[in-house]
Length: 135
Ligand code: CO
Image 1 (cartoon, rainbow, N blue to C red):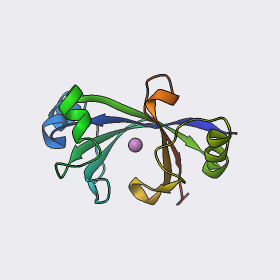
Image 2 (image 1 turned 90 degrees about the vertical axis):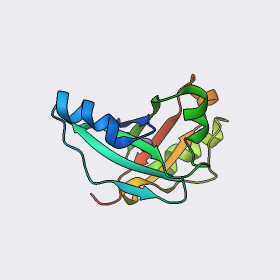
Image 3 (image 1 turned 30 degrees about the vertical axis):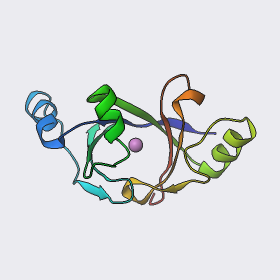
Image 4 (image 1 turned 135 degrees about the vertical axis):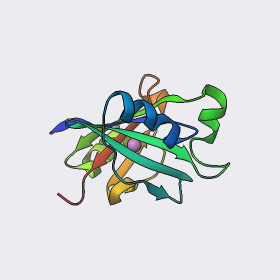
């Protein structure tokens, strides 16, 4: 199975204030922002060669990153691996007894298929798998 790092997710109170660092100091371009209504977050991607940085900001108090921000503050949130057969990885995760955060892959940012492994099943790292749909 082909696997590579797709992106690294960073939880922020404000994407705009973090962009000063990424754009002014490092000159990294960002993609357009996208609202993920169900998850209660806004995301923007920065491109660093083949790896992307996903900046995530809550758009409401019960967003999926609100607890994280409250408990741990801004910072590293998850790592995402790009795979070519997400159903297969999902089934294997289930077979091996790893804890997933959904009962099947769902539509995530950019319309891609995603699922997450709970940090307790992945050595303390919230782990996302992504299969790109439009390539
Ligand atoms: Co992500």
